[in-house]
Amino acid sequence: MPAKLLDGQSLANEMKVKAREKVELLKGRGIPVGLGTILVGDDGPSANYVAMKHKDCSEVGVTSFHRHLSKGASLSEILEAVEEFNDSPDVSAFIVQLPLPDPDIEEEVLDKVLPAKDADGLHPVNLGKLVMSKPGILPCTPAGILKLLQRYDIAVEGRRVVIVGRGLTVGRPLALLLSSSLPGCNAAVTVVHSRVKDIGEILCEADVIVSAAGVPGIIRSEFVKIGAVVVGAGTSFDGRRLLSDLEDGVAEVASFVTPRIGGVGPMTRAMLVENTVLAAERKAV
Image (tube, rainbow, N blue to C red; front, side, top):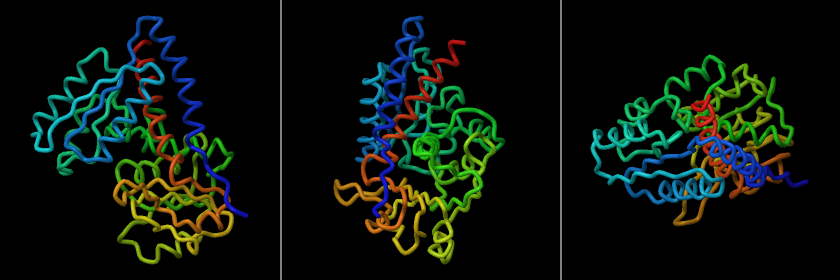
């Protein structure tokens, strides 16, 4: 029997309705709710992603602020944009769109974002809270994946979860989240990556697989045990066509699977809106 789809788009739409209600209440109290984005360079997928984030904001009444810097922008120019958003009372939270043209400066740039305005949940302070299983701002994609699994009553507690990829935005924080003692987590998590041999043998033992590799078709049907849950969180492009980490045949073996479009992506953006609204609420207390 073909796998059931983990419909992230429908859940994201519901989350945006609730976010709009909260935004209206905040604005009624005279509290601004704004999301800032900083884009460095002209990477097509990054620019498109930022545009989609601002579209989401407009749908829920969140004010958008954007700074677009050239690919050759210096570190000081990027940090100047970060400080502008840090200081702005109208910007509740903001992101620096990753990857930057120079990945070597990403850590320094993220470190300058005020933790309370860190919409992506990637500041060392917020990641540190996650390490300690303390409540805080959660990274958008990992939090979105957890919400999506919970929506379909897929428990991870005590189950074997294998994550493919150890990147800063998905793999590493997702491993921290799912293995934490926070509600709905407590999973047995294994992280595999390009330096790990026999990845297929490890995947075959998983109850839940999350691929964040960005390698088309890296998750093959023979790597998935019957009835496992498979989440494709990694993407790549063939021209303008969005490609999934999941081979098409995975849907014939898994019990639940994310669609190529409308799975994790909408959940990531919905979590960004939610984090922005939460930042505004915390400031209003």
